[in-house]
Length: 428
Image (cartoon, rainbow, N blue to C red; front, top):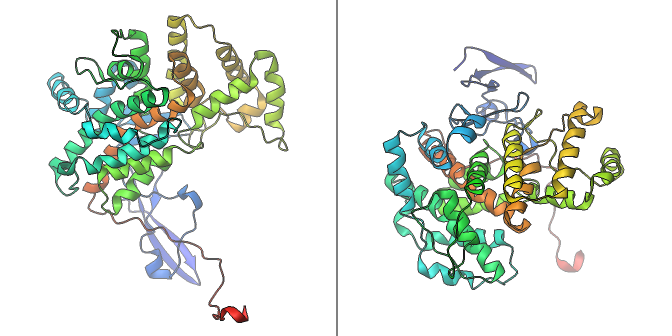
């Protein structure tokens, strides 16, 4: 706690509020006693200037383009660690030793299969159901099958629930894809890595052996790492808010998936790819850039700028490298990549984009990679949810263990009618 204080002059009275310091980042003013002492609330739509919790997991400096998981730079983790090491880091606070990693992988892998009766659950959905709709329903239904890990007050049950969610999410995601294309479900293989197992469940078929391409496996692993957590974003805040009521972890993660589905959040990479397809070829870029600059034109360039980052998204730099590796490995001559590269050049040089700090973000490249790997656009957000599960569950665990945690209860500025006299229906 800092010895600094902030002084508010309210109705002729001075009110001192303490200032709190984090280990890095902006200081915060403690307004918890504001209502009790003044009868007033703060007004902050979107909570963009409000710290909703104290956390030790992820830190973002949007102005400098920095993303840290437990103090480690995202570039270093994407380059030198694999996703399971990142999962361990987010859950437990430190990178694992070789023995800890081996045990962690074993403990998580033990839970990759889902209850057989859950397979029949998929048959209740229409064949053309969006995979995210299936994800919300199936993940929420896990609480009906795993009663032995829903007691949030038992640390062991919380740990088992965490392992189950991390392990089963690839299985459920792959099943959602298989269901949408009419192919049989493929069981997990525990001899494969996390990323390789997901790829074989998604693209493998029972009638022939599926060989995982190492380049695609590495790219998939990087995508998972880059999306694993991102501080108190909309879906993470949703998980924390749902969890603050004491809801079971499966319900909380289902709530996070539902929030992630929104096009302004997890659906951004899908929207970005659709935009690139709309542009089509490099020669049409000037036309669309001009439209993007026109305030009266509803067209917007997707994949540029970020709610938090006012610099180059550090995840985008890693994703750009992966995009070239994947397309080079597959021999894909994709005109969309040419469009993307030219748009990137313009965004980094054009005065309009530079002034507004509209740098390419992670969604700009991830959609191209996933398309090249064979994923339909409807699966893009599903992959985001799969990767973000470990972040959600880490944040949820931290919230449960926080002694200052209270049930979420935002206040409002009421602008509706005051007390009105009720009139019988014949007098209205």
